[in-house]
Image (cartoon, rainbow, N blue to C red; front, top):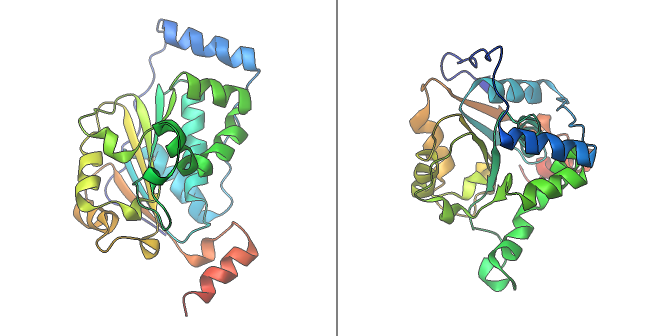
Length: 242
C-alpha cells in the first residue's frame, strides 16, 4: 500500500502558446519517420495504479517489494511516454554494479557492450511502448542513455527521468550520490527488493528511512499478493518465504 510521504505537488499548468524548439521538431520528425505511436501504461491492479499516481505527482518515488510485481514495467512505461511526448529530454537508466554471478570486468567488449546485459529488463518494455524503430533511434541519439552508476558522480540531472533498478544493491554512499544529482525538471524512480540484496547494508532501506516525510518523495510498497509476472513466479517466491 502506498504511504503518503507528504502533500503531493502537482505539475504547473502549461503555457498556452510557446515556440517549438529545434530539438522538439527533430523528435517530431523522428516519430513520423518511424510511424511511432506511444502506448499508455495500463495498471494491472490497485497497487500499480497507486504507483503510477505516485510517479506522476512526486519528484522521487521508491517502488519497493516483491519481484514480479511490475515495478520496472510501470516506471519504464511511464518514462517512455514522457520522452515520446517530449515532456523530458532524456531517460537515464542505471543500476549498481553488483550481481550474483561474474561482474562487468569479466565480460568482453566496450563499456556499452559490457553494460548491455543490465538493460535487458528495459529493452522489451521500451520496445513495447515506443516501437523498435523509435527505441533504437532514441538509444542512438542518447535520448535513452544507459550509464553505470559510478559514472554519474558530478552530473546534474535536468529535464530527464532517472530509472534506478535493483536499488537494494546500492550502498548508502551511492544512494546519496545519486539522489543529490537531482536538478530542475528531474524525476527519479527507484525500484528494488531489499530481500534480494547482495550487500550487507542496503542504501535503499537507509534512504527510505532518512527521506520519510519530505514533500515530493513517496514510497510505494509491493507485497507478494501483488505479483503479476505469473502464477508460478508467485508460488516460487511464496515458497522461499518459509
